[in-house]
Amino acid sequence: MVADDRVARGKRIQQRTGKTFHVATRLLPERTRHPTYVLYGFFRVADEVVDAADTAPPNEQRAELERIRRVALGEEPAGDGPQEDVLAAFSDLREDHGIAPSDVDVFIDAMAADIDRSRYETYAELEAYMDGSAAAVGRMMTAVMDVAKPEKALPHATKLGEAFQLTNFLRDVGEDVRERDRVYLPVETLERHGASVEQILDLEFDDRVAAAMRDLLDRTERLYAEGVSGIRYLPEDCQLAVLLAAVLYADHHRLIRALDYDTLSTTPSLSTARKFRLLARTRWLWQWNDDPEVVFRAASDGFDSAPASGPLESHRLSNCRLVSFLTR
Image 1 (tube, one colour):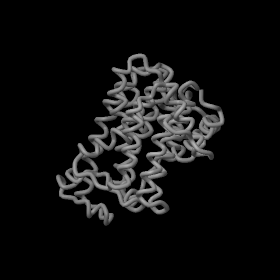
Image 2 (cartoon, helix red, strand yellow; image 1 turned 180 degrees about the vertical axis):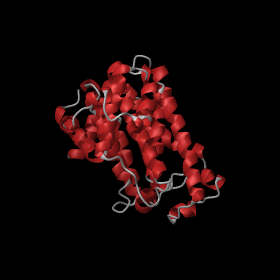
Image 3 (cartoon, one colour; image 1 turned 90 degrees about the vertical axis):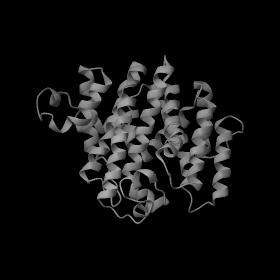
């Protein structure tokens, strides 16, 4: 059992650094919501080691990730301090919920890859990286949900984790170059459309880059379709939260298209009001149809054409209630 203060620490990390995911997490039942806070805190602690390139040399980053691995796997006790509490909480959680050590390993390996690697030649190489950075996260979430038939849920959880990660990559192209000198768009995809890594590094956007972005966005949306179709295999009290996470992340694609795929010069983000509207709409649709694929399509594509009044309006949560829901 993870102590309440350690759960609260993970929650604060998520509220500060994962606002979109926090909206969906609030819909989980407590038995899953609290472990999710702990998971997220662990992911961020490891990720921040890699993003400390300006303050720590590569050998120190690698050594710290290896120490985090040992603590996470219960091979070494955590130290003192807030971040160490996060690691200790994850170690307890891993044991309590039977999280596979192999998923911890591939996650840490993916974080370590970011120290030395900033380019991906093929989509297959990027996919291998995402197995640790994203798909393993989906598998860990499946473990804490206590899924009855994991063999059915896991393939879909893997696809949905990849979809979330690709959305982040496509949203953050310019930010990743400016802040981390990283390009996650595969070289082969860029070159197939006449673009190059050098263009991305120089933040030079044109129709060729747009075509590569469109290609990857289409691929990502196919992953969402595969991932969402597996939500039916999750416990009933977890399905809406995962569905909402998919709706919120996929809505970034609307913003990317509105920018004509130019995320080199700006990083699109969902407004608080938009999150409110998507939350209200998804919850309302779910009351009338428990098919996750149908609701995902309706919530993701049909919102802007929904009537401003009528049944949908009468079921919307007020802004005050939504603010209370998101911040408690």
